[in-house]
Image 1 (spheres, rainbow, N blue to C red):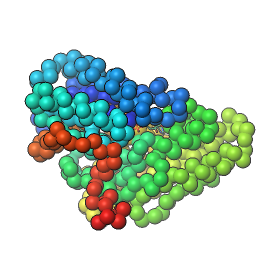
Image 2: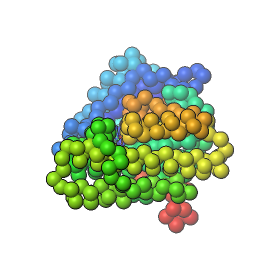
Image 3: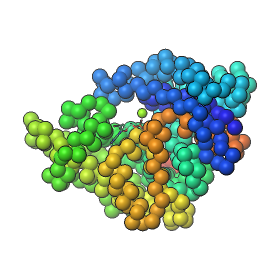
Image 4: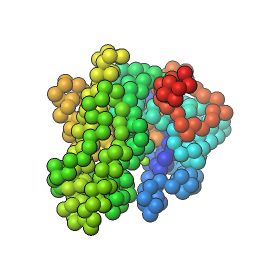
Length: 352
Ligand code: AMP
Ligand code: MG
């Protein structure tokens, strides 16, 4: 089975072609990604209108290149998959409409993929792991712990009640005058800083429900920054190191509670899977490696290019859904908000 996957939900424009392996897992034949970081850098964050226009400019070139790199023809494809949300509506519409048009013209099945489901299934693309497993998704837009029980079967155990973790990294970087995207810069400065100089709060630490909160931590950093201004280079390094130390403690604690909640509701997980752009952070990776080593849990960290937004994960989610006969109509509407676990969302908002 050969599927084209399109991703345009945020600031990466991507097209990829993935072939299903006979014994499960996927073979990535092409994975073309155009990051728009340069277009947004001057604004200190992703500007939705600029993102949507850039997707329009790049997507068809990327599809053409993916076809070339994979050495296949459009008629060889078995299906077209496009991310239909959650994300910035203008961008989502670009990929979704392009995917539908290709499916219509080629008379191939169309699959509308939930971007979060694609992140959740990436560990099966790379490592062919069995269900059920615990997913820690940490990106610029999402921070959640999810029980991945099967294709189209997810249980969100906890999520952030305010900022996403990547967003917190980016905001702290901005306060310190570090360029966007701030995550990698904070990590770099943290390496030479003193993680114990500032006792920043560890929000939610110890709570049974594995939720996250970062706005209090961010405010604590802001207050310290304002109190000390002007900052020396050493101050900036120490703030970054102390902030990252707080984040690392929180991530280990929340993952521990997530694992407990998982065991209560789904039994033993086959692995802990980490995905999203913040999974690049070596402080977080190292701490989770130590934690999993102590608890005997398998840790799966997909390669970085598959942790951040990409088309291969969309194509592979399309393969997994197609295997279950889960195709979509061409009138499938874009979903800027699209929780993996819709019942949980309804309960959360008092609708069910
Ligand atoms: P994504 O939303 O998956 O595209 O990932 C982008 C987010 O990941 C941004 O908020 C980045 O600041 C963050 N990020 C990338 N690399 C790192 C890192 N090494 N440490 C912390 N955050 C990072
Ligand atoms: Mg991104």
